[in-house]
Amino acid sequence: MEVALSNREMLVELGERFAELRRAEVAVLDLVAWLDKHGASVEFGYRGSPALMVEDIGRVSRAEARRIAERARVLFGTIGISGEPLAPDLPNTAEAYSRGEVGVEHVDRIRRFAAELPADVLTGESWPIAEKALAEIAGDAGPRGLSRPIRELRARLDPDGQAPDDRELARPDRQLWLEQRHNNWTIHGTLDYETGLKLRSVLDALGKPRSSEANGGTPDTRTPAERDADALAEIVQLAANPESLPENGGEPFTIMVTMTEQALREGIGTATTMDGTIIPATQLRRIACDAGIIPTILGSEGEVLDMGCRDRTAPPKLRRRLIARDKGCAHPDCDKPPALTQAHHIQHHANGGLTTEENMVLLCAHHHTLIHHTEWQVRIHNGKPEFTPPEYRPTNLERRLARLP
Image (cartoon, rainbow, N blue to C red):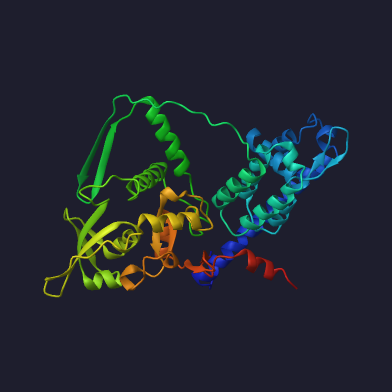
């Protein structure tokens, strides 16, 4: 593709192409619903099954054909057994999809949520309000950004839910080796079947491919092994939170490093850990948002200026307030729980930022990196985190304004 546009302008173009693709998908679903309502699946020998019709005409797998037929039904309605028209379950989602604001993954998350609710909830007065709210949220967030609102709505709409399944934990023999090689670590070992099954389940849940929205506007190209390693890193983050670990000599989890004052203030240069590992200062600044970092700051002649302090870390009382406010990763594209988050200083501690509720926000490791290294911005507005995406990433408001005459 030969163009005379900048990368930024091409990112804007990419967002519009995604919107065009979604509008084309909606046209297909609308046609499937129309054919179903007008009896095409009966007339042409598909036994009244729109899924069989889609499988044959669209040359798609049976599983995908069923998903397409179900999307068409919940978005555009169908015909009942007695021939009466049945209204769609997700009319507001259909409108947002038709405008190119949400994608098929958003639709599937909302329709699966609707399918799990009791019939009397879907026919009550609360569901249209809840579905409209989810459609609006989906217009600005990636599919995972719907997880937390869906959990909250499920608690309100179906408070009884299903009874929990309590199981006893087995403790068979297990072995694990963790060895450092240069600046990396090698891990190998053996797990019993039950523990391995649980770990596999957790890795699958935490290591799903990210949507383009959640990945900063680019496809997730990580291999399965890389996604598993990223998921394991989140599990380690969960266990390494100061509130989760027992104290060691009166101190929770702590990293000691040596670096120059300029590197700490400006985020340039390198830092050296107690075992001799050299890490970039930018990486240390990110870690320092929510870890027990004790820097030894050196002057120009190598003399020790300061042994540092740990007050950059959010203390337990402050972290509890952040959890109560943010309820997990505060980024709109994320649903990670509080245990998998880090407390980010909006104005960095090294630049005079205070370790206070007004200057901190909970972020998962991925979105913490995104805030540090991309044009995403965050501030506290009216007591809540408010995120501003890069200008090349279209927002729901911008799309709405673009449709105005």
